[in-house]
Structures are given as C-alpha cells and as structure tokens.
Length: 329
Ligand SMILES: [Zn+2]
Ligand SMILES: [Zn+2]
View 1: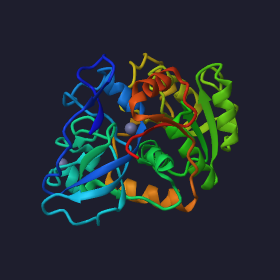
View 2: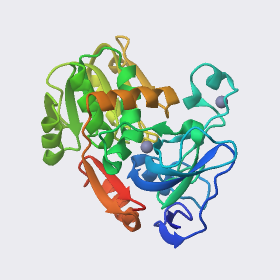
View 3: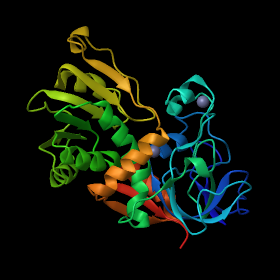
View 4: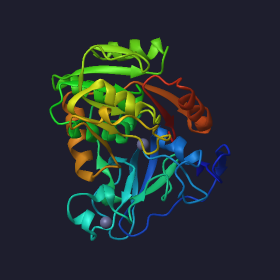
C-alpha cells in the first residue's frame, strides 16, 4: 500500500510503498477513504510530542470501510463505514479505565502516534475503539468530526452551561464547536491570530456573535473560554477575559510555555484546566449530536501524497476549516 511515513521528528514525511497491514486479534482492516490532518499531527512531526513509534504512519481522524476482520473481530460487517479516533486502545483495567476516564489511561495507545494511523491507503484498528459514522456526511466531511469535533465537544461539555463562550484559535475544532454551541443557544466570541480577518469573517459566518484578534479585549466578560491554539500566552489573556467563577480550558495536546501572570487574574474562583484525549463515550455522544444538528464541516482536501503541504498550510494558518487527505479511492 501507499503511505506517508514519519522516519524521525523534524523531517518531512516520506511517501513509500509498504506491505499491507494485517489485522491482529480483535482488529479490523480498513480501506482509508479520508484522514483529517490535526494540529496534534504537527506536534508529532515536529517532535513536541515525544513518544511516537518510529517509523510511523500519522493520522487519527480516519474514515474507512471494513475490508476484513482479524481473529475474533465481529463487531462490523465487511463494507461498514467506520471512524477511527485518537484513542486507539486502553487497558480497561486501571483505575482510570474503570472510572470512566479511559482518556487518562497510563497505558493508552494513540492512533497515528503509538499505532500506525490513516495517512495511508489501508490501516488496522481495534474494533472496540472504532465508531459507526452518521449518514449525511461524505467521507471528507466526516473526517474532522473524529478529533477536531470530538475534542471540541468534550471541551464544550466541560464548560457547563456557560452562555458567553470564548474560543481562542479558529481552526478545525472551533469551526465545529461553534455550530454546536450556537445550537445550544450559547453566544460565541472568536479570537483569531491578530489581523486574521479571513478567520474572523469565517467565525461570523458560522454564527459567532463577535470575532476579533487575540490581542483585542472581549466586548463583555465571558463565562468560559476554550483555547485551541498552542500558545501559552493565551492562558493569561483568556483569564483576563472571563468572569469570576469561569473556567479556561486548554484543549490542545501541546502548548508553548505559559508565561507568569499576577494572581488576581486567577482570583475569583477562576479555573484553568486541560482537556486530554477522549473517551469512547464522548465519541458516541458527539457523533449523535453532530448528525442531529447537523454540523456542517468545511474541508480543504489534499491528495495523500500532499500530506506535507497540508501540514505546512496548517502550520501557516492557511486552512479554512479542516485539512483532509484523500487516501484510497
Ligand atoms: Zn487503563
Ligand atoms: Zn487530533
């Protein structure tokens, strides 16, 4: 099969023909139709996430159809379309797994990080960690649901009933979570890179009540903020923008160092916390909600072979919505 391979952090992905993967016990073999390009992939490629298997096939927003079942796998009939997310495996027996927090499992394996992912024509996945996908999304449109949408949704749920929601970084996750938040009757305040008027316009088109650069003050106090951009300096900025009692969520898998800030920004029972990974429960719930609203994803497609271009465009902030690779036809 054809795949894009990471040999070492800091070097471009290499296009190669490698042996087809074989599904192991409990695994499905998938023909990959589309795979989203997530900011976490950039963190893996750049070496900011430091424990990838190498060589590695990146990619953890996989839309594929089942070609074959490995020994003991029977959940999906051949031909079923499924999605594969970032959480590829968890132990099921540790304290985290047994208390509904498999996202925190110490032994968890992540797709496109410790397990080969979807920048390829074929992949294998543990059937228990695959999701059936809602109808109404073609393969390209469904791919960003599997991380951007899912992590965005987990973050949104953790804001409780916050009515005035700040979102920092208006990429793939933000463009989905804005639609869910609007559907729930919340108001969205979108903060983009300073001067990114295209991004601000995009946010308004999706229903944001206000959009501006992250260097500008919010027009009114916010009830919660979600930071998707990997920029630590946004933490004190968001704390300054939220009302007493509000939570600031850091939703990315990596962030630059958070600068020191005066205690009064945290005072008033403001909370800073991270959002890590996903549980299968998050995925099931979000995919149901996404199908019902329905969420409409905006995607920028690339051929599989152009994965390096997609990563470069994401890094430069040149992607409207989500970048998605077209893998096998
Ligand atoms: Zn566990
Ligand atoms: Zn991701």
